[in-house]
Length: 294
Image 1 (cartoon, rainbow, N blue to C red):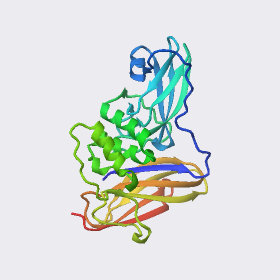
Image 2: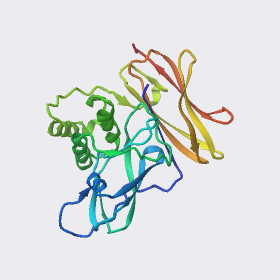
Image 3: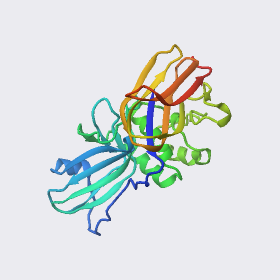
Image 4: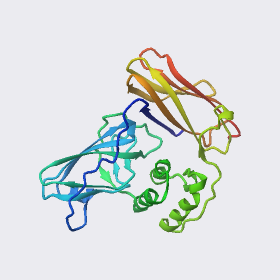
């Protein structure tokens, strides 16, 4: 079962993820991050905002130059957590012998792995496995009104083998999205766009039909003090599966976003719970009834 969990403190000051220094107007093409690393540059990447951002510290041992961190670049961490995938181009000037710190927006690869908690180090390599993904991310950032709603689904097409039909695009932007795919994907065939990924309608009260491959839910909670938490899935037969554990969550109001894969799972009543690690008490609970599944 695919499970993705994101959290953001409602009361927090918004973070500008693509914090970019304006490069001097020097001639020449920018140096790609992967090429820079081959030339002896170093970088340290750590997770922020539960995997939605990467803190990147880059050190340039040579001449000052413009550096490109290309959309589609992947930072790989431990096997148990999702790698971070850059979702938009970042262009920054790094002076000779200096370090540059950036906070970059990112999507999660490896949908079946856990979201990275804050301060997880992505130290298992940097790569760009798909030129198609890089190009399409560039196009959606240019052509779509809401590229952030598309980037995560698109990344899973390339990291997890999801179909393009799994990418949710608002009705008003589907024609533009299909044009992008026809331009950028060789031999692309329109798969049709029945509702695949969606949020529940208010009248459904958490019930999803067999048309929904993936259910998206949001829940607001107010934690009285910092605590370590876990996310548990209770299946129709009562079996409990820990989806995430040892999550350190700060005090205050938070909005939790849950993405739960439903495809191929039997009908029945499922419950997703956020629990305290120490006491086992339930902080929030979301019931989901699957209908018409195989």
